[in-house]
Amino acid sequence: MSVIRGSVVPLSRSLGRRHPRRRLLAVAPGLVGAAVLVLSGCAGPGTAATATPVPSASDWSYNGATGPAHWDAVAKTCRNTSASHESPIDIVTGTLKSGSATQAVRIDYHPTSFTVENTGHTVEAVPADLTADAIELDGTRYFLQQFHFHATSEHTVDGKHATAELHLVHKSKQGEVVVLAVLLDPGADNPALDELLGAIPTSGKEAELTHAIDAAALLPAGSASAQYEGSLTTPPCTEGVRWNVYLSGVTLSTAQLRALTEAYAGNHRPVQPLHGREVTRVPAA
Image (cartoon, rainbow, N blue to C red; front, side):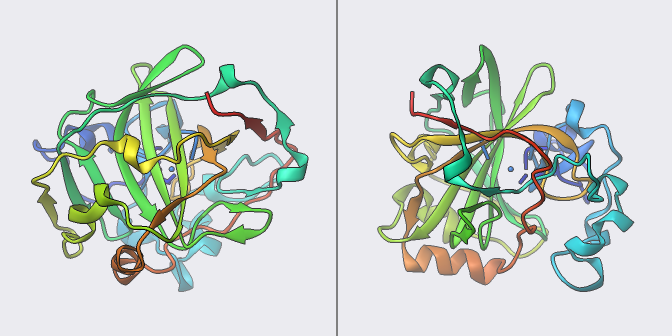
């Protein structure tokens, strides 16, 4: 997860004028879940969670000598210690602390123009207006900076992966990150993603979408969530990200999921130890 982008995500390219988001993510690209941490991939715009220098995108991958087991070589903050509060995690439904509906994320999304980008690690969509879509959590407003995908899912529920996972990365005016995570499995198609998944560019390229996307169509209606404090799911794995993982998933068609997995199959970080953290089950608002 980028701070928000998949989890804060490293930015490998220069910040472009067309994407004010890149200036925000330059501190920590690569974030994603109920916590918005990822801005580029699972990293997000510059925030308190993105103070760690961001490794180059070429320094890490999802397999082999530069895979997750070796990310501590490019960012010490990716190292697992007894004090680590890293993401993703396995959500054990029988052990969740009970929360109230007042803790639920409030959604304020509207049809918005997006650009789709192939970052070299994920497929990411960036809104033309970084203040157009927002959520509210605990009285603070967070603005959608980007959303991106992982396959298979990064979070697991009772030890089980979903086919893929969507991270919507948000940032407050104070630089705090919240990521909403949505699990994706085969079923009915999602029309909101038809154009995006049919227009995935080659690595390092981007394309403007002709149709607006209402990000509310990407969320499971009436779903409870698991909320916890975690990190970006990509180097530099910066902590301090709030996650909101929906416990009910959303379906994509087989063709839509194939478009994702043909672009990136296996771009997920393994689940990380909980190390005593509380995970709260929050009912729908």
